[in-house]
Length: 220
Ligand code: B12
Image (cartoon, rainbow, N blue to C red; front, side, top):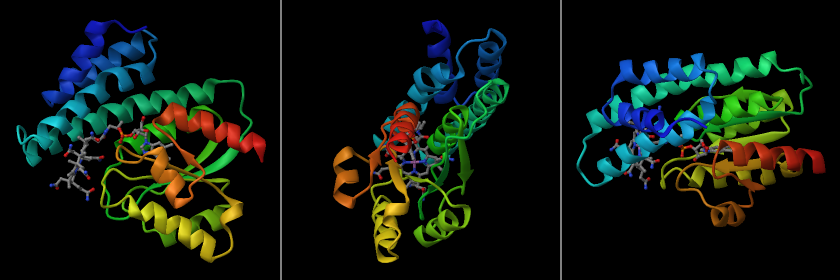
């Protein structure tokens, strides 16, 4: 368990867009052998959600949101790296399945997706990350090319969630829907949305996603 004072300092470093402090805390966590995912979810993420709330209420403007996001992105990259390296050191090297992941077209939010990718890799899944702002047709093409087992999409805007529906429709049109387990995530996405568009799995967060994907792969 990471001390509350460290978690609070991590959240504050994002709110204040303090890159030096954010990195200092990340390094401390790594040096002490503490759990990187815990400081991401209970520390830095709490900070960036607060930043989002302040932005929504007009208390913080876009340039500031961008600065905070930059710090969040940099610090999670450091910790994601450590999570993946842990995986390399682990004994279970057997690949449990191939996951293709992307942030949907029109959407540049990729911090959460980055965390999801590292947790998936740390759990023995082979991950292909297509990045952000990726059209559904391109995702399907890549899935066919790499023979993916799972297609995961992230959408953070209410206006871009619809692209997750496009993906389901393309898979059905091409007659290849049954070849894939589809997973949807992102702040505005819900279990109801997943059901409505015909996605197989809704994941609230990275760990929830990995657990559900592993169960679905076993059932195949
Ligand atoms: C950071 C941020 C940005 C950054 C993004 C930087 C980046 N590289 O990602 C920047 C500054 C670029 C940005 C831009 C914009 N943003 Co913005 N942004 C945010 C903010 C504050 C945080 C998002 C985040 O990183 N969260 C932390 C991560 C860890 O959480 P997460 O993404 O939800 O991911 C977790 C889970 O959802 C899940 N998950 C997510 N995806 C997936 C996928 C799979 C397969 C699985 C298994 C799980 C999973 O697991 C993740 C880890 O646990 C949110 C606020 C919020 N509450 O979400 C607003 C927010 C999403 N943005 C918003 C808006 C309006 C915008 C802009 C339109 C602003 C503008 N006027 O230009 C632009 C849109 C740009 C675009 N076309 O995409 C609104 C959206 C409102 C809406 N209803 O659609 C929000 C909600 C802010 C607000 N409250 O108003 N934004």
